[in-house]
Image (tube, rainbow, N blue to C red; front, side, top):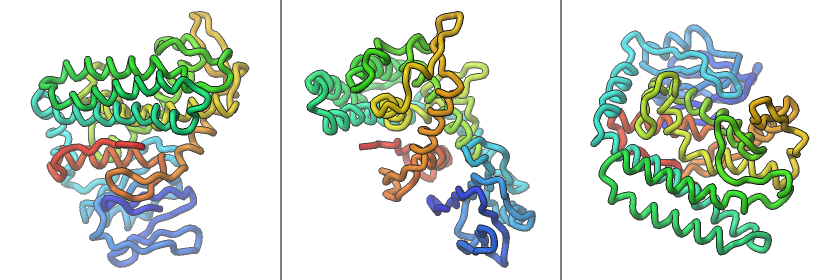
Length: 343
């Protein structure tokens, strides 16, 4: 259980919420864990199958508190909203911004700032921790190029050119990605990104990790009332959750990529956990997927200090916190979207 941004996050699977007077009562079995005044809350996010009492759900609707239900692994299920749902106003503003290149620009700049900054610090963290085992000059050169790109962000005046910068930075980062693989080098060679289909084992892991992360981001956006299909950096395309892809950009390298790198370097996965399909796609076996999901869930339970909130949060909550910050920016509560800047 965590109280952030006037939002109550309930993560223990056996936790149940009820109403007592004007308070939310958080219970685990017969034990009362907390009493929280309703008037202090804007949102309740529940990652538990136990649920909440009808009386509490009715009170949340009356107070205008959004209550969103997720599975314990983070899949969005449903929300309870008041009869006058402010989310329609939030989504209308989201759509207006999407149709206005000038309004989009600052959102896209901050998203790309978060992505490139985090790519740089994944490289810097690797240099710091493993300098004796890798080509530090090569990684440092890539890091410096990413720093130069960050400094140039203020010069860009349109979204299309920013997309070009983002692609250039991704190339710089992935050109040295293989340097961060310290073990099983013969079994996990990487010559660049291949997506549909993944053509090597590292790309298979990256694609699976990005799919999981995109699903978490989409669930987070649904929960705060935003439309995951209408984005700013990623153009609208039928069936594509463009805003979820926007939100995940700054989390790719510090979360998804680091899980992949750690699993390989710690021998938590091997070449035997992959198979080759008829179209030459390299895919994880059932056992390989189970291993990855275990590592993914372990990583999501690790705590970090959120760089904007200055609070301890689990990695698994970061997409939900960022979705809330994005929603607050679109509403006008925040002046600009604060990207997740990891070190």
